Each structure stands twice: as structure tokens, then as C-alpha cells.
Length: 609
Image (cartoon, rainbow, N blue to C red):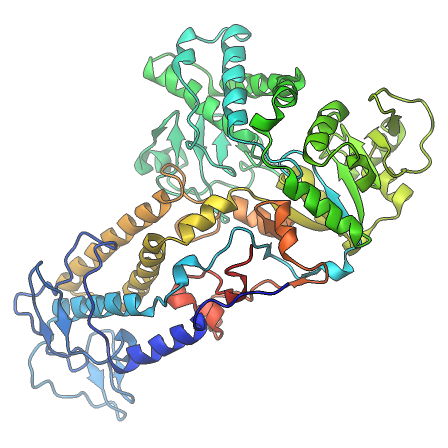
């Protein structure tokens, strides 16, 4: 596959800009995107007498501030001098330098560093940086060579078949009606329509407190992302509810498969209607001052959602209007044809019933869809199908059973899995015995990190690929100029706070507090670009989310859809970026990323597809 270059090297552009910043800071316009504050030095005199600061000219809101300071903040002191925490300097022999210019105006000094840094941030973002990510790319958590993969396995729902948002609305509406009619919940809940962009995948739900929230990789609740019903809970109240901290102890958090004694993590795309219905029901009771038990509410909503699936409503809707609910199937057929044409073996393991899968696959791939697969397993009951804890029981009581072309069960003993045949139930223990497909030569794709991927990677050594449709939206946001400018300035401001916190005088502390306030505002703006309630599914303010942590642990590669495979040769090797640890220096340009933007500079990937 050939890749098209886009303009000059981003790495070279970044390096040139860094060097330019070391010799002369270019003047630029104010950045209203960053803050509502004007770029002025907030000093009554407008002068800075520190030798490392340089002369500063104060201006009004009508014009930008200019500075003759020739160097970066960290280059403000001459080589050979040591800056002490009290603000003075000493020479090589330890003798204090004399200050002929009088006492340093620390406030002016800090604002000069602020404005210099803001100008430098703008100059460091090279052309093309705001369109570098491509949602059709495949991203690697672990090194994977497709040349070593001989067998490709797939889940069905949200892997081979992607569904439109219409399905979420139908699931929500039907479960809401079940809640009212079957569980006798108040009729007033019926007035709540589905809110498409309220929830996000990977959130946690506190079953006992009735709170929906986002938790990071270190088990800390992200401030501003806790909702009781449809309303945010103040951070002060959250801290009080959790014993004076934002931390959720491991024993209360969700377990290995996403559910603990007090918390449930929602990990698949189907869970969006369930989270919204939980929020709506909570909101109704709270708004009408009706006493209720959050534990009962959680169980009832879960059962109502389950009834939509168990009673076959979802299958019926999709089968009756495939065009409305299933997104284009052409890429699915193209992927399967390409793999088979190059001698790869394929298999399908899904929890969905045969009649449903057959209808969808005929629509997407054609009447001969079964000829692509060497093994087809339906109603597999994942994650139990993959779980070693039940392998002895499943081997004895859940053997594979063959289905005929009409989907009727057959009684013959299964001694091998034949190409194009349909099998029901079974277990991985028997699957491995009958096929001999083991280890890293197998690559399995699924959307549910726990049910589809966790056991396969950790227990059996299969390669795993996570399907994350949200990547389409997330990469579009990351590619916007607003995000690039906002995040780069946020990171630069954070670095400035870290370096300047040594100034402890009252005036300096006031300046630092203003910066801290601006930093919190920038965090909120950045979060809202993804989702106003919960932000990105991959990050909290600065840490990876709990979802992102599981994604990295349970998947070798991840992508928006399996169609992304069409962009790569089947001998391609995926290499994860070597992200520097905190104590390591970012030596390569794709790690510098315009000074902390931390998005991959993959020029060659910019225009695929």
C-alpha cells in the first residue's frame, strides 16, 4: 500500500520552531481561543528588573503585549548561575550577585513568562498538526505482525455488523415501557425521551448511591463527571459521599468482568440506553421528591433492558428493517473476501441466534456468507464460553450442537467443526481441541473488552483487536484547531505552573492562583468538546480513563471498525509508539508532539483512505 506525503515533515517543522524559539520569540496576535483574559503583563509599572526577564511593555486590551525577552522561561538564567528558591542568584563560588536594579517585580516577571510561553505555543504548532489523526487507522497497544496471523475470528454485533443510532432509541423506549407496565413505575417517566449524547461508554455506576460517573485508571473519580439522574453532583458533595476523597477503593470498584459489589462498569455500545434510562428514572424520583431504593431501581432497569434482548425485540426490529438499522455492509464483505483470498482461515463466535445472524450476513455479504467461515458458533454465551473457570462444566454439559440450514438442532456427536456449518453453544476448551488454533497465530475482533477479549488475551495468548466506533468522533475532535490550541496551551500552562511554583511571595501566589483557575477552565472546555457531561472515553483531565486502561490491557490493536483492515497489507506489522515514562526524556519528534500535545505524528497515515 502506498502512502501520500502531506507537506513538509511535521517533525522537521517542530524542530525548526523549537530552535527558532530559542533564539527569538516571534510576535503574534492574542489567542482568544485560550482564555478570555487579555495578554497583558499585570504590573503597575510594566517593568521587570530581573536580568533574566528583559524589558516588558504593558498594553491594553486593544493590542498585544510585546517583550524583548530573548529566551525561553527555562533559559532565563545565565549558565553557571544557580537559582535559589528565595529568588536570589549565586555565582560559581557561591557569592551572591549584587542587584543594582533594585527589588525584582515578581508579578511582572511571572506574567512576562506567561505571555512568552503563550506566543511560543502558537509558533510551535506546525501546519497540518490539526488533521494528522485518521479514524481509519489501526492503533497498536502491542507489536503485532499480520504476517504471523493465520486465523481471524470475529464477534457479530458491533464488529461484523455496525448499527445506527436508531437502535439505541428503540431499546430505550421499549425498556422504559417495560419499566412502567411490568414493574409498575410511575407513568411520569414516560415523558422522558432518549437523550442520544448524554452517556458515554466506559462509565461506572454506583449501585447503592445511584450515581453515574467517570473513573480514571487510578480509581479516582474525575471532578465534574458525577451525575445523580440528569443533574451533576457538586464536587464537594462527591468528596463527602466518598469519605473525604475522590478515590474509589478497589474492593468497591467493578471486578474483572466489569461488575463489583457496589459498582457496575458499562463497557459495550448496547449499554448507552441502559445508562440513560437509569439517569432518567433517578431524575424522576428526585425531581418529584419520591423516596426510592437505588438498588431496586438498578435491578429493575437492568431487567427491563434484558427483556428487550431476551424477548427478541431487538432482533425483530433489525430483521424487519435491515437498511434502517445496519450500516453499510460492503466493507464487511470486502474484508472477508480479502482475508480468504490470501489463504486465511476465518471463524465467527457470537451470542446472537442463528436466524438473526443469517439475516444480517445475507444482507451485508450475500447468500454465500457461510462459505467464508471455517467455523460458525452462535448463542455461545460469552464470556462463559471463553472462561476457564467453567471449562469442566461446559465440556460436560454444554457440548457443541450442529444446526441445519433452517436453524433446527441436530443430535449427532460433534467430532470436528466443518466449514460452512452452524454450531450452537459449546466452549473454548472444546473449540481449541477440535481446531488446534492456539496462540498468537489467532487474531480475534470484538467490541466488548471483557466478554470478547479479556480471557482470550490473558488466559490463552490469542491476539485481540478491539472495535471502538467512538474513535470516529474522538479523532474528529482531536483534529480541530480549537482542540490542538487549547490542549497545547493547557499543557504549557501546566508546565509553567510547575516551574514557577517556587515563587512564594503573596503577589506571585495571586498570579499562580489565576493560572490555576484558567487551567481548570481550559480543562472544562477541552472535556466539553467530546461530551458535555463526561468528556472523552479515553481520558480524564490528564490520566487515562478506566476504560482506556482496560483497552490497553485487553487488546493488542484497536480501531473504529474492521474495515480499517482494508488499509493495510496482510504482512504489515503494527508498532506501538514508545511513550516516554515520566523519568524518561522524549527524544523522538513523534513523542515531543508540539510540546506535550501527545498525539501521534504519523505523516504516512494522514491520508489513507
